[in-house]
Length: 243
Image (cartoon, rainbow, N blue to C red; front, side, top):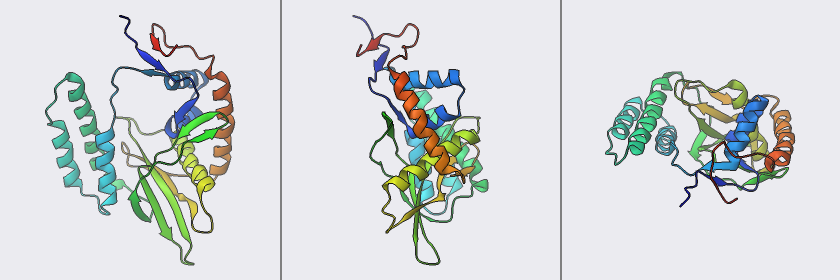
């Protein structure tokens, strides 16, 4: 019986993070990003779900406890694993939490109330379904009693700080998407509250001044992604389910 290595995603779809990666990438890398979004590996992939939950919980506490984060990292690392994959998964998640604990002293979060993240409705941009799931929500009240809102998304790559261009596009997406969804009579998104937190470096990348322009650039890029989707071939040697 033939073993499938990848599953076909027939319709254009990617996360806000992958769209930001695409925007900052070379043309060759862009093709690889689209390919990875269209053909999803069937093997289990290392995910940072536990680490993201630990970091988000620390942020929501209002005062990040470095010792507690270190303890959490040690707990994750020492968890019993039934396979090499689970052992690697625990190690990667522990590294993520431990590294974030190391950079807490330089962390400069936007001055706002923080609450749990939520899933926003998937958004079709020129034929590309873009998923958007912030890790935390931000809100502040201005001196004139206006409500300003935003959201934080986490990024992490071991030993490598987040590319500033990628962060600019992803934070611009947060601002653009929240502006589209906002009831401006109730609350208005603010660029300073739309941010990417790089857990590797501790840098908080707020949406840039030209966020609206970058969002429009992503809009145009999605048209190109949708147009090239069908022509993107699977990885060499891939056995694709759904074709």
